[in-house]
Image 1 (cartoon, rainbow over the protein chains, first blue to last red):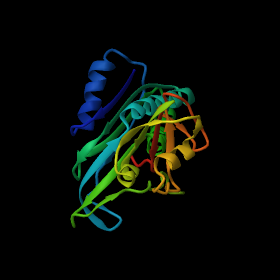
Image 2: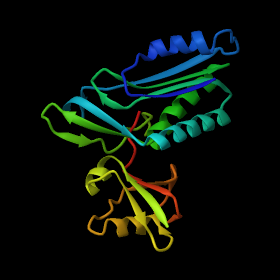
Image 3: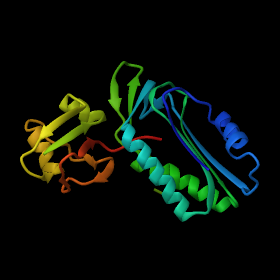
Length: 151
Length: 77
């Protein structure tokens, strides 16, 4: 089972997981591990207070890229179910931006695929963040922070 | 031949619009397409390109009917 959502409204990632398990995975007993990642908007970046963020995307390509990223994860790990949700539009501090959840028989595949999905999304999915600072200034976020502490 | 050119994020602001249809006399690379369509706007070094919603590079030759998108490094998640 695979669910990919691009949402213009705020969402509750934990509620989505509950609903996905209750509706889409109802009756399935083949998974033994669930790994999740939730990315949330901070109220500060690079030392500045951020009041709001606008997430722009390239709709036709976003859908293709996210499907391709999940395809790749499924080819590398024996994962059974994937839930991937990403916000676009106007986002406020503490709003969830992204949810990646992976169900697998064992933890290794769930952990590794969840990290891979998140990192590949950060590097390939056509989303762009523009921050609005408390000072009123607007600026585009120009890059990603490292995905591991060893980078 | 006609191609549709799209710009996103800071590149949309740089060129001043989000899309334009372009009539080309002959096939050319995505890089030279930028120069032809935006003769007065230098292409940023970190510019990425997608053709028909798939990543391509600036040396890829654009075909009739293609949708060519220029954008900066992606920053989702």
